[in-house]
Each structure stands twice: as structure tokens, then as C-alpha cells.
Image 1 (cartoon, rainbow, N blue to C red):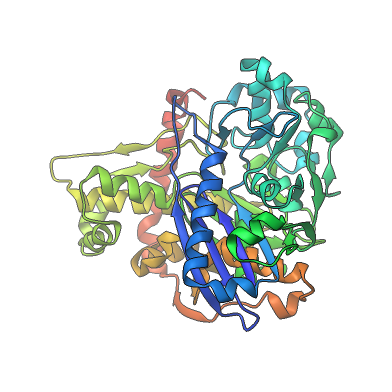
Image 2 (cartoon, rainbow, N blue to C red):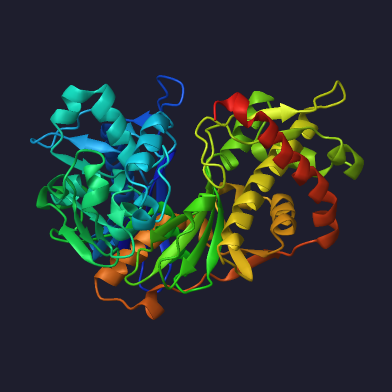
Length: 488
């Protein structure tokens, strides 16, 4: 039995996986995000620990026997967050998250000071990454910055609490902008840009390696065996890939979560920073991946559902699906940049826009505009990946937005690629974390990293794609026309 812990932005998930690949139990505890100022996005690490303790208490109550059989623990989590600790291990300030956009000035300064940074890290300096957050902290919170003894990523802070070890792994570390991604080690040049040294960084392991052992007092509290292996784990997308068996060159997935991600597995380091494509280490040794990332995907659907007072996201999608083609063609355009944007624009100041509203537009028309706009954003990212040589015959479709067959058909048509839903693939990072624990306990990739059974397939519709093309071209022109108004 293996325990996967996935620290998301909106929920901490726990999953128990047995050695017959059966998911024995899952549970989740909700988390909230604090936005004290425009562009800011923060969470208190204490809330993560409280959520983990609550989730483990639930598992102990309902699945005590399964917990006693756990051999290993794996960690997955939201990437890029900055958890700063003093010499006593105390958290210095709330963690700045992946969708925090306050450090745009620092990003520009880092790129000017070190033009070779993208060649080292595989990525442009973006506010979402960890390093610019520390540059911001050095400028705006110098007294706190001076007390930093250690910087950890969110899931790695949980590891410190679980096993007492300050450790990260390659896939998550690649998202800090401090890692030499090709060589899979910390970069002195990148660290120097933020006034930090390797001594303030965690030790690095591969995601499938052992990183620590569970503290005896926590084992007793939760009904686990003491000394259980804690695997390196993975950043949320790399762990999700492991959970879907996306571990070989040419494999890929599209995730419709809070953010929207297209992930392609590579056998070598393949950066394309000019198009704001991310090039990261995978959670397995000698493997890398490329990603296009948009910051608002299913979260944009959730936003418009609440804004319009609809009973739920599925109900709004049903209204959208019932729209006549002519009403879709006359719907407003929507720029889905509610939290800024990464691929391909790298613009933290980009904002959401409805364009072309009239008295005739209702909830269904606005809902359609949002679903289509997210699709157009994903298409822009897919084209950026293709420009750098990325391709896949099909992509696994995962995340909360993957439940809608109508939306899947729209996205498959836009991308011109089959989208495949897998049985159990919604487990995502938690399943991948459990699998990485299995690997750290001696499992093999072929044995552990199986692909899920296919539940359904969305095939591209060439006629629909042709009908959408003019609207996509207008969508791109609209962003270009408004870019200066966003402050970039």
C-alpha cells in the first residue's frame, strides 16, 4: 500500500493505492487563497498542515487497516510557491503562490542582469516562478529577507514537517528559476541573482528516490508504521504525468484545472523560452518535459458560473451546449487572463475581457465565450509547443474541466488532436505521488507507471475547427490591441 499526498491550490488530496493498482481510498480538504492586494496570491503553510492532519484523521477513521499496510509516502504539489524559513525553521511570511504576479519588475531586472538565464533554466523569468518572488522580497521586505535560512517549495515544506529533511526533487526545483535544468543541479549564477546561495536551498533527489523517513510521533498519530520511506515526489504536473503513465517521449496530457496545462514528455532538455514555453525536469531520472501554461482555465468557468448566479458549472455547460450555432458565432469574445498569462504572452498584467456584448447576450452566451476563450488560450499554447518541435498524436485529458464531453469536443477540434479520458485519471497528482512512493520502495517504471484504461475519446471535428478559426484570429488581434492597455 502506498500513500499519495497532493497539495493543490484549492484542495489537499490524499490517496491510498495498493499493489494491484487499485485506488483504495481518497479524501480531500479544501484550501483557500488570500489576495490581500492586486496581483498578490498567498497561503499560510499552517493551513496546509492542518488540512493534511484533518485528511489523515479521516483516513484513519475509515481505512485504519489500509494505513497500517502503507510502505511508502509520495508528495505532489502546486509548484513555484515560496516558503521562507528562519534558522529555527519558522515560516517568515505567507507563501507567495504560483499565480502571484507582484514581481514583474524583478523579472525584467533578472533577465537584464543575466541574459543567459533562459539557457540555464530553460525558462524566461516570470512572476510565477520562485526566484523573482525572493527578488521582490529582498527589495520590499529586506528585514525578513535577511533572516532567510532556507527556501522551500510547498510540498517540500510538508516533507520537512513529515520527515525533518529539507529536500526537493528535480521536477519541482526546475520551476524555481534556480535550477540548471540540463544538469539537474542548482545554478550558482541563477542563485546569485537573488542574493541567495546553495546552502539556503534544499538537497536534491530524483522524484522516484527516497528522501526522508516518517517521524515516529506522526506514525503513531495516524496509525502508520514508523520510518516509512518518503519519496522525492513531483511537482503537480509531473506527478500527474506519472499517474497517467506519461513517462515516455511523445506522451502528453492536457490538464483543465485551476490553470490549463499542455504537458509533453521529452528524452532531452528542449527549451523554447522565446514562446514562454516551460522546459522542466520530469519526476523520473534522465527525463524532461515541456509545458505550455495558461493561468486561468477551469477557474474561469467557475468564476463566470458564480458571477452569473448559475446553479453549477455543469448546468451552465448544458446551457452552452444547447446554443444554436448562429448564437455561438455571435457570442462575445473572452480573453481568459483573469490572473495574467504565461504561454505564450508572459504577461502578468494581462486581464480578462468580454468584448462585443449586446442586449441579446445571456448567461449561455457568456458561458460559451468563456469556454471558447479558454480553448483559444490553450490553442495559443499548443501552437507555441509545436513551434518548438513538440507534438503528440493524442493527449490524455484530466482535471475538473475534463468532465464535460462537450468542452472536450471543442478543445479536440481546436487543437486538432484526440483527447482521451482515462479511468481514474482524475486522481492526478495524488495517484502520481503514490506511484513515486512505490518506485522509491523498489518498483519498476514498467510495473508501476501503467496507462489508465480508456473511458472515452473526443475526436477532432474539422468542420468545427474551421468555423472557429476566424474567431480565434479575432481573439489574437484583440489581445494585441489591448496589450498596451494592460501595462505591457
